Length: 128
Image (cartoon, rainbow, N blue to C red):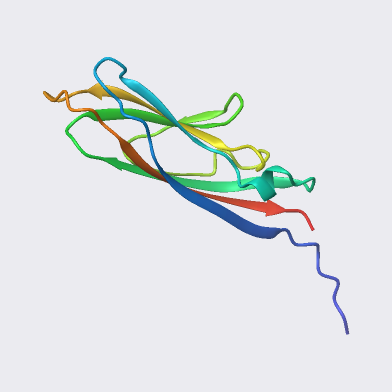
């Protein structure tokens, strides 16, 4: 007896880390771009995002307000703290990258420039 199994989508991921530009009292906003890997960005296959994990850290006392956006015009998800696990981008084209936007919410008595070290992991699937 044989059974016919439905087609399964292959689950894949990519990740990277990056040290962002300095955020200063004169320029209290910065963005970090995380493009999809070149081989994925050039893919003609249908690839969709399943979930995303992003985290960041920085030195200093400044409190940041951050949000993660799909590159090229959103959607965006606000971060509540320095870690985000979300499936809000599920179904979106995985060939697009992400932009992590930071704004100083409070300098907390400090004027020391802030540089954000961010890590992103994107899980996606390709229809087989």
